[in-house]
Amino acid sequence: MTEPVSAAAVPNPVPNPVPNPVSAAEFAAIAARTVVQVAADQRAHVAAAGRLFSDCIAADGVIQAFGTGHSEAFAMEIAGRAGGFIPTNRLSLRDVALLDPEGKAVSNQFLERDPGTGLRIYEQAPQVRPGDVFVIASNSGGNGSIVELATHVKAQGHPLIAVTSMAHTQGIESRHPSGKRLFEVADLVLDNGAPYGDAVLPLPGGGAACGISSITAALLAQMIVADAIANLLAAGLTPPVYLSANIPGGDEHNRALEDRYAGRLRRNL
Image 1: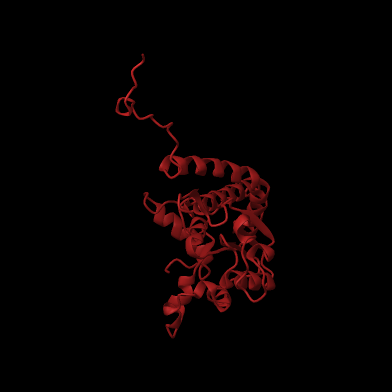
Image 2: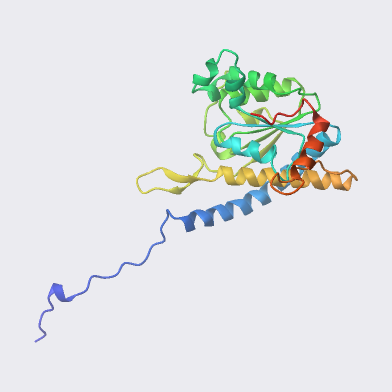
C-alpha cells in the first residue's frame, strides 16, 4: 500500500516569473519603441515644419515657441539652447506674471486655462514681425490660453505649428469659448505619440505612471531644427546656431549673433 504524502512534504510550486509592468526597464522599452514610431510617423510633418523654420530664418524672421506645463520643455528645446537657432523666443506663462504691472497674475493658478492669457502672451512678446513663425506645444491642446494664443497668431497671419497628442486631444473638450482645440487652429500638426493621459505604465489599482510626451516632443523639436539647418546649408546659408556657453568662445559667438536681432529676443526671463 502506498503511504499518503503529507501536505507539508510537498514544496510550494514556484510561480512563473511575470515581467514587472512598472519598472525602469519597461518604461525604457516603451520609450524606445515610441521614439522610433513617432520619428517614422511624423517624418513628413517634421520636414514641413523644418521648411517653415528655414524659410523664416532666411527671411530674417524669429521662431516664437510656447508651451505650458510640461510642454514648456518643448519651447526650451527650440529657444535659447546650445545647438539650436539664435533667432528664437521662448514665450511663457511666466512672462505674463513677471510683466504684469499690478502683480495680479502671479497669484492666478488658472493662467493656463484663462483665454485672456493667450492674447497677453502675444502682446508681451518682443517685437513680433509678420514673418515670424509660431510653434505651440500642448499635450492636451484644449486649455484656454493655448487656443486663444493660437487663434490670435492665425488672425495676425503667422504660420502656426502645433505639437500635441492626438490621442489625448481628441478625447477631451476644449476649455476655450470657441470649442476648438489647438490642432483645429494650426496650419501644421505634429503628433507626439503620447496616449490619452500621457502616462504609459499601467498601475495595478488603475491609472498609469511615467509620462512620455516630454521625450517625444524633445525628439520632434530637434528633428525640426535638424531639417531646418539642412535646408539653410543646401541654400548656401550659414545657420545662426548657438554654441554652448560653457566652451571657450561660446559667449562671444552667441552675443555677436544675438546682436543681429537686437530688441527681438528675450533672454532675461
